[in-house]
Length: 111
Length: 109
Image (cartoon, rainbow over all chains, first blue to last red; front, side, top):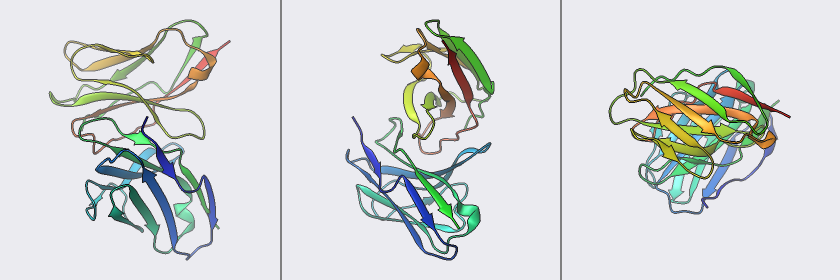
C-alpha cells in the first residue's frame, strides 16, 4: 500500500513565524499535492508538483510556497504565518493517472 | 473539470446497502469519476473510480449511467465503520481534484 506520511498531526505556531509542513511518500510517485481543508469549504488545492523542482499553483497559493528537492518529499512553507492559515493541511501523491493517496493531515493552529 | 453535486447527508441502517448518488451533468468524455471518503480526523481514503463501465472492488461498487451524467456509489452491507463523508469527483488528469462538501453518511445501528 502507498504510504504518505506527514511530519506532524498537530502543530501550534505564532503569527509571523515561518512554518514548514513536511510530506514524504514511499512509492516513487512523481505527482504530489498540498490541500487545506476548512469546515464548509471542502478541500482546496494550494500547490502541486509533477516532478522534482517543479511546482504549479493551485486555487489558493497566496501566502504559501513549496519545495520539492527530492522526489519523495514535498514541503509546504508558510512564509509568515497568519491566523487565517489555521486549518487542516493534507498532502497527497499519485502516479500517472492513478488516484491520489492522502496522508492523515496536519492540524495547524496559528495563535 | 466536472462540477459534481451530492446530497449533504444520508442515513443508512447497518447491514443494508448504502446508495450514494452523485450528479455530474457537465462531465466530459475523458473525465473519470472518483469516489473518496473521509473519516473524522483522517485523510481522504480512495474507494473506487470509473470512466464508463460499472466497477466493483472489495470496498464498493460504482454504477455510472449510460449518459455519464450521474453515478451511484454502493456500499453493499454498510457497517458502523462506514460512517464518513463521501466525496464524488470528476477529473481527467487526476491533478486538479475539486473536493466539494460531499455527503455525510451516518450508518445507524
